[in-house]
Length: 182
Picture (tube, rainbow, N blue to C red):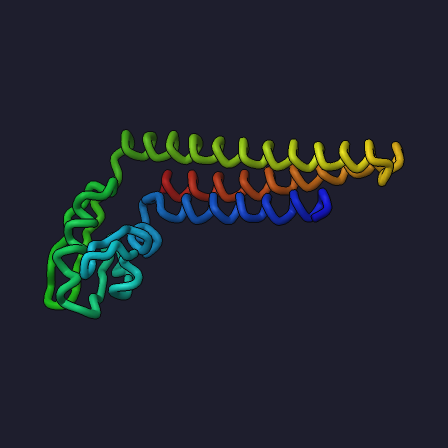
């Protein structure tokens, strides 16, 4: 694996993971991503909610889960009520309904802090990947596979890729913070 493939593949994975994590953070609008990865006890196995029912949005602030097997309903309710969402679930036949109350300003501030913390963790991962790629460039130079000019060019390419990744991270975060603030 070349230094550029290393930073591109791992960097894309980091950005994708960040977007997935941000998708699970509650905003003023309901999103199926809030619930889909919550683990539910279903026939003595822990499975994501998205494997036991389909999740839908009912504007303005309600989510519903159309459960495929009634036996999963108690597990779903328990998983939702014990999650960090601080909401309660209502059973309506084969559906579970979740009403999301309006976010208080204090809660919005907490969510923004959480988003920034998660983002910083992902930026640190990008820096580790950059260091890994730079180390690989140095090893290639030391073994004689890269000339000195090519080494500096390679380091510039790695840095450009890191800047591109950081731009993607910043874009995702600013979008999420804007959603929280709405």
